Length: 224
Ligand code: AP5
Ligand code: MG
Image (cartoon, rainbow, N blue to C red; front, side, top):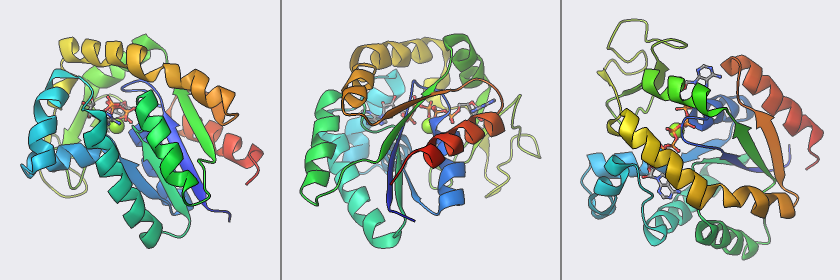
């Protein structure tokens, strides 16, 4: 299999994390979620975590220099750990981040293979995010949904046994800020990646399996 360098792209709650996890298990890729990395940094009170905390809790984007630093390090580790490649989830989210990624990969004579836009209607997103619950331990990072994927024992993570909680930024008013940030700073990247010929647009409605099937089909159509 050719090395996969995939970006999972979409609005907050579109289903990036859910699909990334499944895809990475199936294709043996490393899942690189900037949201998960930053939540772990906040939990561990590292310097990066201290800088990111208030932005994340308010639903605003963390500064580009912080996030790019985190991703450069994570991609470096992923390249050494998994020969099959990686899927980026939640990065890039701004034009400067996309340019930093392009330049970093160009130094290695590489580029992203495919950007998968999970295109989920706003009303579906709102329903999914208000019903989402997450493992309290960011190292575990398991994601649940009270409606579509409840934990087997109420309030307990199936994977690690810790508590299952609601993310601080999944309150309705913070969801709204995140959506505004997406429209303003992140959505312009759809055109950027379309122009680069890298974007596939996948409908994000339906069950997780239906969306996964569409992604697999897009990947099989894509050469390389
Ligand atoms: P991040 O953690 O990336 O949050 P996000 O982009 O807001 O996306 P979400 O994780 O909320 O949604 P998702 O698309 O992963 O959906 P999920 O699969 O969970 O980022 C958090 C914060 O970190 C940002 O706000 C920012 O502050 C900071 N940050 C991160 N990256 C950054 C960057 N690059 N630059 C600057 N700041 C950055 O699904 C949602 C729910 O729906 C779940 O409950 C799931 O079980 C359910 N579900 C999913 N698919 C389906 C389906 N098909 N049917 C039914 N239910 C479904
Ligand atoms: Mg996510």
